[in-house]
Length: 181
Image (tube, rainbow, N blue to C red; front, side, top):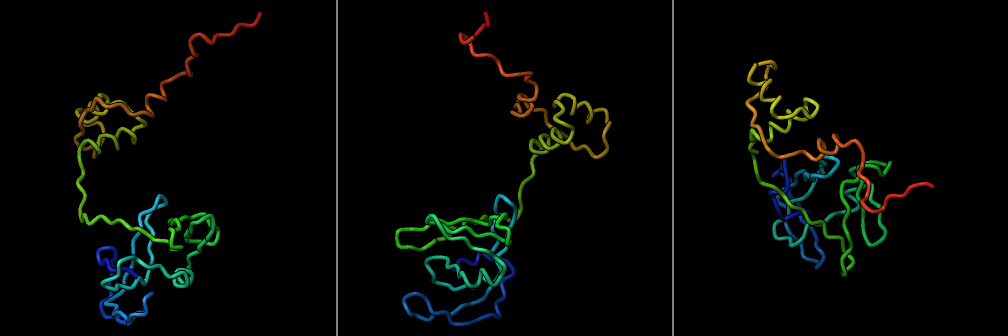
């Protein structure tokens, strides 16, 4: 359950019910939707999240999570939520607080459209061409040698992977030379 409508997508307003909360009070649910979580493994969806206005905290039902195919592992003062039986695809992990609850803090980004910049495009094409230097990328663009290559900006920034790739070996530490006799 959540009170934050902005966390949900595909809200079904026709859904309504009364929910009994921890203090015994009955509150009205005004809909249900799907919660979207951005994780390291990609976007995950938790279905049938009830919208209850006036809640102070997001509440997670262990039974509902299990019913929707999630696997929860409790231990070491935390819960880990997985989306498959193999326990390989971690959705999130939540630490236990002093009052023995597991508060799931969710941050959301209400941006509808994201700005694409030319500089980001330049790095993308740099990687696509096997980390080709920017001067050569600009030459490909200028001579129209690649169909669909957008206008790129040359940058003076260096990509750490390119620098490490040009190293032949690690240097020896000064003063620690050892010679066999």
